[in-house]
Image (cartoon, rainbow, N blue to C red; front, side):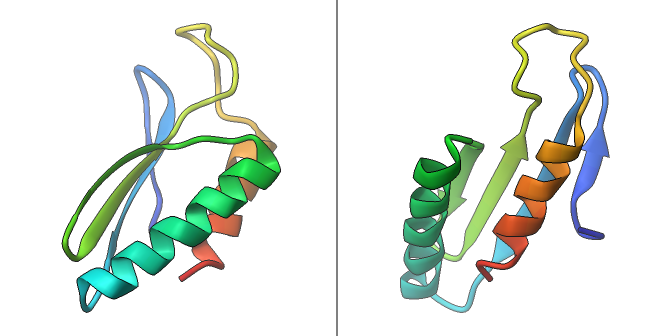
Amino acid sequence: MDKWEQRKRPFRLERRFEFEDYESTRDFLDRLGELSERTKRFPDISFGRNYVNLTLRPLSEDDEALLEEGDFQFASQIDELV
């Protein structure tokens, strides 16, 4: 969890994952997709050949929504995919 950055306005968690090659990047994205389907949590994703940037936002659509324990648990589950 220590590599996730907590941001405000709007509240969110962000992290960049870097990989050796495209195959590793794609494998991570496939496992992330499976995790997202199981948990019904869908991060904002941008990626390139050897990196993935993720943004986790609170489930609430409210602009002032705060991060909750479930957001941090989801981030930890993503960390376990690496």
